[in-house]
Image (cartoon, rainbow, N blue to C red):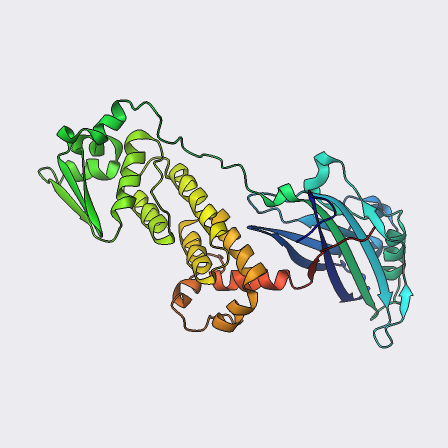
Length: 381
């Protein structure tokens, strides 16, 4: 995607809806997404009540109307656009003739108000047209076309800050690491799916409620424990974090290893597990970027992130699936509520309780929300 400058990206959203004046509350809403690289931002545009604005003092209730664009609030990062230009046209649905074409309105909010979105001033040409359209029934049934051109800094599509990230292994190791490295203290064996590791029973006892309960009960005289459903690298990563409160990155990261770390951390009742998973998620996020051309890898990361609550990895996978693999995904998994039978179909169809949508539906929603958005490849001056 190109841009106006090296720092700015431009997105154009097209929206059409029939005009339906009413004495009740007017509310026309559309949602769309802007995608660049591993980041997807969701937006909401609406024609509706001006609850706090200048239209509040208007005479008739159906004149309380405004055109507003704002970013989705329930996200890890709220997008900050620098500028938005609104264009509005009213057409006859039968002939396509333009009936009203007010002057475009460009809104540039101050930096401290960018997260609040954009609102067309009531004194603008578009604001006056909205009053004209909705104050009577003469335009009922006509077609309203709204085009928004959003300018967003490219920095808004980069993830550079990771809160709660644990420290990495220090250069100078203290007594905590000697508990792990001193073989003379190794008196307990963890047997995993693909290997085994020795560690200190004392270290496990002090650092994990799970092992304290085990050693105080049935495992008082035990010298080994089997975890045949997890990789040994996951056990090593979790034990190192439990004992030292630092993160030692595994040689390679994969969706299955991330899932093993998450499951084992929960089983061991690791303190500050969220901090450990931030470090794992950061590695997964980089792997998603590196493998963005492979739809199968993206889907595996996507469903794993859904199961392990790694929101940034999930969003990155959705962004690439939407921008790079939309046609292939629809061809293989379909556009219905339940995906076509494939290796990943069962996991794509798990909603994990509550009101959480399934991963498959999340991809379909994202693909639909970008269908009316165009990325400006070149801007003529």
